Amino acid sequence: MTIAPDLVAQILRLHTVEKWRVGTIARQLHVHRDAVRRVLAGNCAPVHTSPLRPSRIDPYRPFILATLEKFPTLTAARLHAMVCERGYVGGPSHFRLLVAAMRPRPAAEAYLRLRTLPAEQAQVDWGHFGHLPIGRARRPLMAFVMVLSHSRMVFLRFFLDARMDSFLRGHALAFVAFAGVPRVLLYDFVPGNKIVLLCPGALCAQPA
Image 1 (cartoon, rainbow, N blue to C red):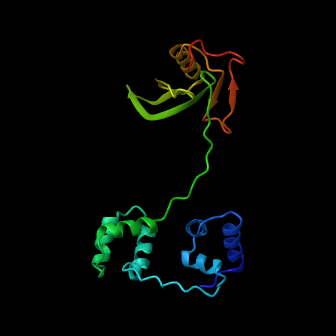
Image 2: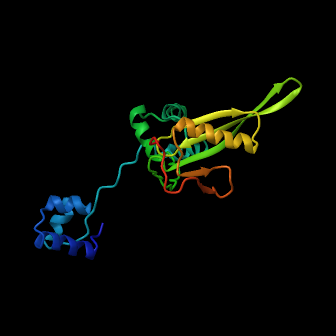
Image 3: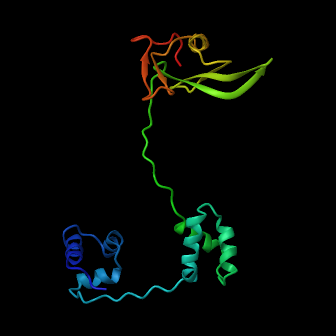
């Protein structure tokens, strides 16, 4: 391949100004040592590299990629058995490394890790656990849940309804269990995650 003029200038600068050795320049610029020596010798003729040898897996690469696209969690051992039935003669260890490079990666998800101080915040929600037959009646089984954001301590209490009196009683029981009142409550079931300040400027008697 031909050495680009900007790469030639970079090699010359690193060698003459920065006093880098041939091996250092080759490693940092990802070029062959012979190419660096030719530039330093003033011979910038095209450098011919040996062609890459074909891999045994190349004929089966489209099949492997198509299979992984449909079944991304399929094991390398199962894929190896499938391609062996189609004529592949490579070993399983090297095949596993090649498949790891071809396996589709899940899309990265951006998220923000929230950190809170002790006793600063708790999250409140209702959970529905079906219904209970009580006599001839069929009552909903609801769970009032409050989680301290700092310690992840959970308070849970079951009710047979989700009325306001049960809702307020769940709060009172949770505050007793936590030995104090968080400064902020975050209600997950309210559209927009409405935040309610219960005790501005006050913290729990016992840190969460």
